[in-house]
Length: 322
Image (cartoon, rainbow, N blue to C red; front, side):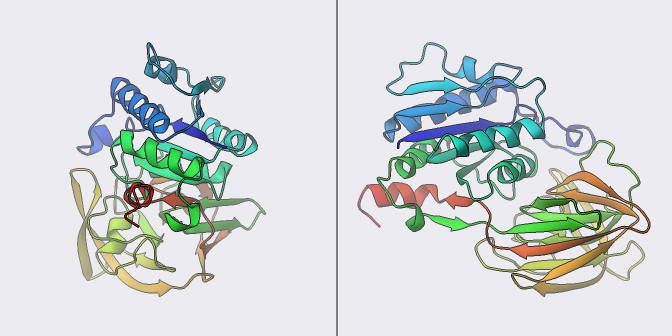
């Protein structure tokens, strides 16, 4: 009881969108400061132990340097290489260690990796990446405090969380994967630099979040339909660069694009969409899997993802205002 974990993606905020768009880089120094404030907040909220993910850059070690700690602080062993796999492993380790809440620092892709390691993890989703549709821009100090309030059971988990949706993808070769915000089929042949920044190759979008103000491929869905993150369901959009109907959307920070639309429809929880190759599947803004010409993937909407902690509500509950 009382254990908070903090998982940070050291590579978040440093991809190709700094070159092809106007995305701002997120420096290691900024992440160190954010980590330090999250630890301070967690201790203020009553955490007795804080477990931090390790990495090759030593972000956690720098964050707690000369910090007066009122809780036991443990840093996980650094992985051989910083990667999506190491983030998933860190999340799985948190689950096995009985962590009460996790502060996740990263963008949509990082939170997807955490969900792949611990599907129903109780998390505070803190944005430090490029596509920040799933995580929110909380101050790390109160994010850490909210996580500790949940981990110490000072506030009930069910009262201050909502269950995130997932897009479960089953490939015809038996493999499976998931996205939290969107799964997109593009005309690309290779995963290449992973980040999707050109709209012409986008063929189909399945988005669980299509809210005004979103930036990324889900912004295309938001331009034609609304899907709240807390409401069951999703939006399925079919695109064609030659279509007569067009919308403009911010597909990356500082980058608007015109996209041709063929159709869009609402999906209920449990509904599925079959995506047919050839092409590449993008998960939460990153190209990850190649589909051959005779390959298919089935995307199904679920409501059994991470339990997302509402920071403001947790703090209000603790102060007796809920």
